[in-house]
Image (tube, rainbow, N blue to C red; front, side):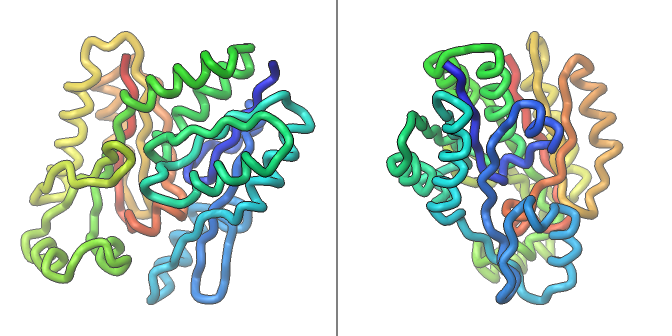
Length: 278
């Protein structure tokens, strides 16, 4: 059985990987005032951060319309026997529900999985599925592997500023004030499909240091480490990448700019680590 892999734009996949494995991407929307852009189609990550910096109002994001999934599914079912769709956490967006609804509207086999994550952590699952599909693995084999990866993949991000989560209504004014006075840099992470605070550190450097220490502890002695350095505009990543390579020299490390949809909430200067070790 020839299986196609479909995901959404928050996977932040590199274009060469999308082309190599013929991965279907359903874009979410980013809205600046009365202008709507499709993530990755008519708005790149770098262009998004420039545009966000020049706008007083924080942009909004929206899940894809159901019809966008249907068109993607129908296109791939012309060339493949079945589709495996892996999408961002259903607890973070209605995208997953839209993908499931669309699957019931097409004539063909479409299996939909909740990645319980987003950005490069979602990308890890998608690429693994695409490689397995290309090598001839069955749907059962691929889904079992992805479910295993889902439980073992970690994603952490250091926020340089609380402005975006505050402006987006994610925290109260008191929390923003305390963060500003004490210069607290929260480290957030994804757990069971939701965003939570992993730690609160007094400085940005110490927050990044804490991530690297955690990364080293969690990957020591592991035979295989797949890792990603993720960042938003304005972040200094060269030293972080060097230190990742130093503590995990055998790791396969990808560097990815966080796309518009997640970037709306992270803001400028964000740095994160995503990894799967076994």
